Image (tube, rainbow, N blue to C red; front, side, top):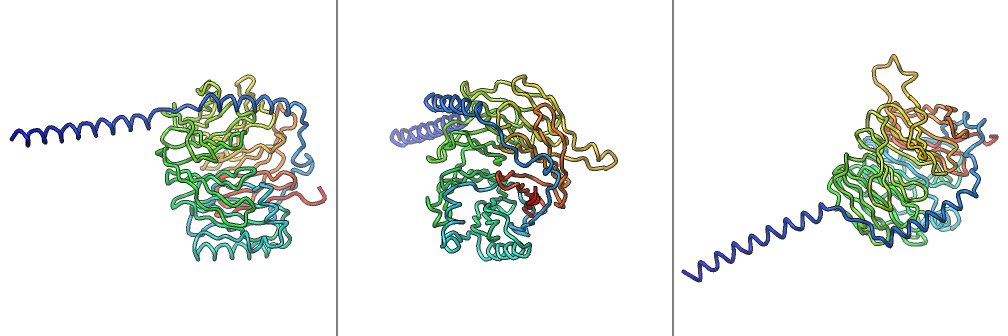
Length: 430
């Protein structure tokens, strides 16, 4: 009896210890983790270097002001599954090694043709290529990259007008991705609550393969942002966290929890010492990377911030909101100095415009705003005091979720819920 009683007590103790250990581990996973002081010092060193370079650099405009009004759609690409609604993000792959493999290697057609998505994806890729070929001439040495509701990431060669690679990255919508600027690394974020890091060969002779799946954040991944150090990125989740992650190690270096509200978007300042979070409450949350804490909350919008973008010179911030406006902020004053109301011409319509995204070009002289009605508006910001509308791009039949300027090509890429990626160009005579 004593032995049996002893065993019972021991089992109870073991059970209690297990519960206690589980509680401790759970508490640890929910506690904010800070970036190391060594990494902060690395950020500060880069910031000083970038600041000095930027003062010496003269911005080169995306296109001459007179030509900006002459944008037209030159190509419409149905790159994603027709069964899934929409394309969420688009970018241009500027990786030098990728360009060398695709545009300079004579064997690029065979070596870069990885397809990850089954027969259905292959058929869609062929259809997209046929549609592109029917459009006529090539679009320059540009590789478009897009992600959609089908969970796929598609690489498309605009010059040769053919699909390079299609990765079935997630089972649910892939709303965001990042490309490393020099290494064969891709990061994807999804509604399946995961962040995935994909790795390719240095010469792009093989397709991307999954390196690591990160699950520390417990909500849908709403946005990714590359830090200027290039080897690190941040991710925001619907569980009211944002995380700082190593590209190479595939490891969380900082996790910040219990935010004032969920962030729908985020971006790093060009110097890397400020992070901006777009709140679902309409506030813009400014973080100091040195102190690793929120320093300010900019007020003005009345609905969620779908996208925020810093200008190249680091002085200005543009925020795109579901309230139908884009606000321009002077970071030196922490104040908004202009509100672009995209509902000005829609007073009689029942459904109000929402701004899904806003993006500066690399010079900071132009700003593009994407809307829920399928319209993209282009603004000139050369005066630095006032943005002026110079073009309205029409062609999409559903919300435009994202856009990307392609520097040196007089080109703009747009991604829409109408399941297409469109290419917009200025005529060769401009």
